[in-house]
Length: 523
Image (cartoon, rainbow, N blue to C red; front, side, top):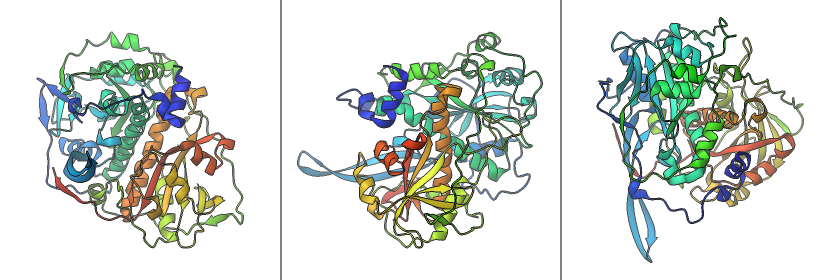
């Protein structure tokens, strides 16, 4: 199957990308975390509770700060049991679902991503570490200084010597392929993006300066971490420091290759346990991963700034009220966040709440390697939504014009039944939901500029916006449930997106909700 056809199926006709009669072997499921054996391990501090109040000079490059950062970004924080009832052999039966939860959402709670860090601290040996979420510890993979190697792998774009650490976000393909088969490729980019969104939110509160690098020499970075690219591959690299991460222009005319860099370091041998006995091949994921790889730094590009159409304020536009930046207990919002299913409930929603939700979600800019030097980073994805029973907002489908802080009505009417009929599973009652958001991006995912790597970059940037939306919703007392099981074609038609070559990337119902009926304990 051609890659373009495969990606089109993943987005518009999922059934065509999946084998018939696909059955999940639940008994052979992998662990939701990666375990290394026989390597030096350094435990991280685990206080009973954390507090992220923000403020200047909060971040100190030491083990305590790194512990706090990693725990909030991707640590296992809670254990939960949820009881369900169903019909089995014409008899009513109940079963209990058990899960280890993190502060970020993940498709099926499978958490396909892993975190690695390159650290230069006085507390522990300098080198490359895997963050063991299961033990909240650091596992030493390579000891030594790798500033030069890492800098070359990033195209000499960053002054790595000034950074106290670098975070790597990888994807382990089998961790959610075993359940979702080929559809896992779409999930993996979004899951990685949600982790990036959480990392940016935590870094902001800890006063950590970051830069997200989407472009790097894949094989060189995977070699540095000791990853087999057939099983796992890095999706994003994030240098961080106590001071702003400085771009450097020196020696950027020199081109580096993965082959030459891999020869600088020996192969890393390590024993990993992941529990599954029978791992099924995933050829399409491997083909896409290889097609998205960079072999030479001269292949790195900068994306042109999108020429966004300026919409004149008209009778179809609604100017939203000004709202102050939200101040909220970040720790509490993270701990209380969950994805409501049938727990949404109708409530009185004000225009001010909607205005705060929209503004807070998109009023950000993060440092990344896709913009030209000196250009302000831009949002390459946008927010659309169908709103019902919101005071001062007529029911309808809208686009949010962030520069004007206004809503532009695309279609008038109550579209809850329309959207409900588009769900592949009736696990959310959209008639109880006041906001049904759609994160929207370019239909061609920058393929002309950056090739197939553009697809996963777009999914990651959608994931960043998704996490900001969920955190903001939590701060306002709402819940949000990310959904990929929706009819993309009908949503694109609703918003008239085909005429502007855009498409809906993910659907997110947001609104008041009841507490979930589960047993939950902190870890």
